[in-house]
Image 1 (cartoon, rainbow, N blue to C red):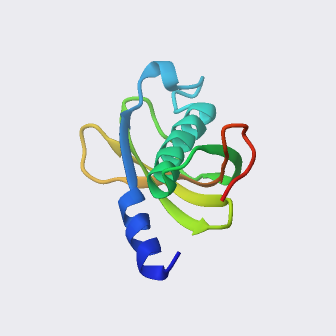
Image 2: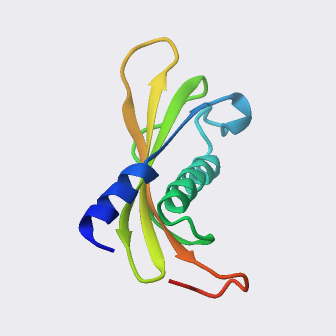
Length: 128
């Protein structure tokens, strides 16, 4: 894939998802449960990877999920996913989760991570 096609597909694959952090997604500290955060990040990265490749994909790994700032109940988060690297059968997607108060301006990067996907055929075997 030449660089201009790669950059265009990368641009089109940018994915933004906004969610409200309600009590059913929080832990005993009244902050977003880590497993829920990772699920949301996997979903955003999957959408980005699928938009980029338009192929059947599966998540094969998540690398270094950094929980940098707590995400309190009653806040809004925006997940931003973008393709970072493309291999022969795999894609790497970076995801950032930004948190903001519902009632005040400003936002802070709360969580970041990297997810890797592999393209598969009907039998779940890797494909280009």
